[in-house]
Image 1 (cartoon, rainbow, N blue to C red):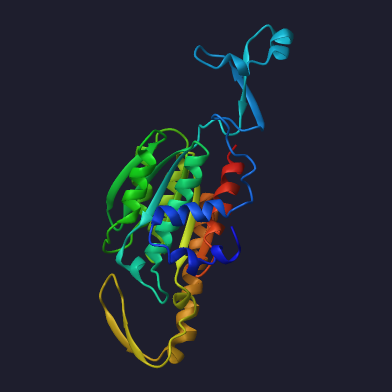
Image 2 (cartoon, rainbow, N blue to C red):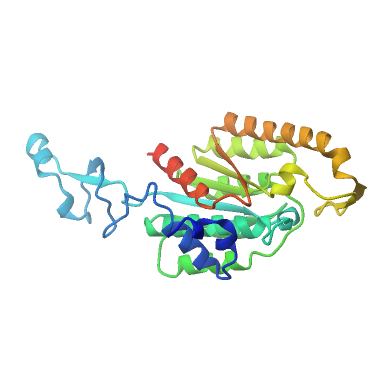
Length: 295
């Protein structure tokens, strides 16, 4: 995989979402030295007591000789990771100053993460939401499941307003075993409710990774000349000169993002801001870091 292919413009020009995800994962080298082989990686992790049905090849006979008890060696990719991806499909996610929208970029991030987890043998699920939970695919690792995820992400639909708290609270009720929850959203919603959802999920001992996806134009407000701006969720319109309002706009955006960071820090969530012109593999690096920290 060449550096050119990792350019998001090249990746996003590919029509097939599954192929985009495959190219992102195949091009990502860091952290992939733990690839599974027959369900196991080569890196030893820990022991647990042998149970009926375990593969006797992984019994530690030296430990048995010392303790007179049977223990099996666990390896880092003996899958017990359950991951749920929460994808924002609200109207604001359809905004774009590029050839692809925030939603298309976010769906590619979600597909790339799902592809990577599938390769590692992890159970992955998907929730689509706006101000309501629209679609739920529980985390699984079985034949046909990955194809279902890709099909859903190919045509996620478009919702209305953004409220990540509804998805966070819903998954807190559904995910009974400890897992990793990945939220992908522009987070253009009231921060307090978002924080309440994070704390509820963290209270259930789940690990959290948050990807805030914003278009470069949203981060800079660099438009040529006065124009009509429309809120894609409320449909409110305002005619303004970007040069005249840029300073106040950026100040308010910085304050909003500061509050988002504080809520994530309070809840122990890992936060990564992704501009839609940035390489998609940044999301994989953040995921692998979170995966290592939870072991």
